[in-house]
Amino acid sequence: AHMNENKEFVLVGGGNAAGYVAHAFVENGIADGRLCIVSKEKVAPYERPALSKAYLFPLDKSPARLPGFHTCVGSGWERQTPDWYKEKGIEVLYDTSVSGLDISLGTLSTKAGGTIKYSNLIIATGSTATRLPEAVGGSLPGVHYLREVEDADSLVSSWQEASKVVVIGGGYIGMEVSAASVSWKLDTTVVFPEKYVMPRLFTPAIAHHYEEFYKSRGVKFEKGTSVKKLVAGTSGRVARVELTNGKVIDADTVIVGVGAKPNVIPFLQAGLKSLEGGIQVDGQFRTSAPGIFAIGDVAAFPLKIYGRTARVEHVDHARKSALHFANVLTHKTTDPYDYLPFFYSRVFEYPGSERKLWWQFYGDNVGDTVEIGDFNPKYAAFWLVSGRIKGVFLESGSPEEFSLLPKIARNQPHIDHLKLRNASSVEGALEV
Ligand code: FDA
Ligand code: NAD
Image 1 (tube, rainbow, N blue to C red):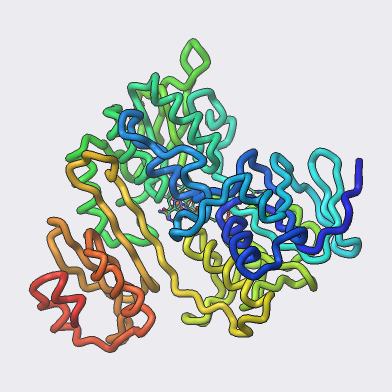
Image 2 (cartoon, protein in one colour):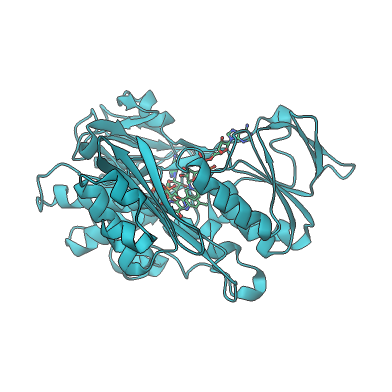
């Protein structure tokens, strides 16, 4: 095993947050020769959301491929290809997995037996897709998970041969991948245990509109049931899905989207404090050990606006935590991170699609809801606590309407419940 020379800033993880840190370090003139990125992936940081969206367009609809969506194109900035990192003097160790941390020595160990010495460590290792156990058939050929570009390539190659697809999970991956699957004209069934899709965010009424739209595009749902077993055919490849409700669905391709887990094991084993399943940080992304920071999916941070700790597995937070961390480091701010939760999705957006669905949500989905619109095409939902708006959801808004959402969620205006309920249109409700 070899010992690398001491690096001033070592960032573990080559994902969304890493790409935005690299951007900010270059902007601040602290990248050249001072930043080293250690990534398990073989490619430079990219905008991960593309993997379940433009990457999965039918092959005749110009799907996205690298290097088209390296960070930071998602924010309209320069596309950071491997050459960009070289030009900026940022060392990237690709295909290198960190397996250990020794805080007292200030060293990382890699799976391949190497050692990396750091002065400052930034942990941005993101999450891993939760797998179904081997005993349930979770590792059979034809069973896919979606987290990295290699997973998306493997899914696309399965779809080229597929005819019957089952998607397990009714969350983000389930919704985006099933929409893509029917766009490929594949027989597609989504299975999940809850009563309706996206239960952590959607109301029953919101979910109803999406389910009806999906059904009109050919997606079938098996709700309120779970997977008993994925069963292989004679070839060894998955051939059917047995559900706990007794039904059996034939499938040659299965995509599992049953949640994600933060990649924190080596760091918690080294003694960093844990919260919410992630790494505890303060409002400046400092962990419990000096000189060690955590951002993105793994960071459990003070969500100042609501006075609680949160871990957020969404790209807006990955980007903003990276930028805020860089601003703190370069003394551009001493303010604590003041994040406003923002989630979104887009489906059926391939070129030539009759209608695309696009929703955004800002704030906190707590309290009672007032919902307005007929989904033809617009729909809005407002979450209210003691007469104040806490969260706001909008489908198919105009850019101007979408831009009102963060203002509403941030200001939490007092609202006349009746006036809102009686608003004659989504546009009118957003004005209230
Ligand atoms: P991210 O997962 O991006 O990067 C982590 C990096 O660390 C990876 O390169 C990984 O290989 C590496 N790594 C892990 N362990 C390591 C180790 N031990 N050693 C070295 N490297 C290691 N969000 C959203 O708001 N809107 C959206 O539309 C979508 N869409 C979407 C689609 C799909 C398919 C996925 C999987 C996820 C999304 N998300 C999303 C979520 C969003 O992509 C996610 O929150 C961010 O990518 C998180 O950024 P991070 O940098 O924290 O982790
Ligand atoms: P998720 O938590 O959104 O959804 C998981 C779904 O699987 C839920 O419906 C859950 O009840 C269901 N489920 C759980 N166990 C199950 C089981 N045994 N059988 C059947 N269903 C089961 O997670 P996801 O969709 O897998 O997404 C993974 C990660 O990627 C998350 O961090 C998510 O935030 C991120 N992501 C985000 C977006 C976006 O923001 N647009 C898009 C894709 C992925």
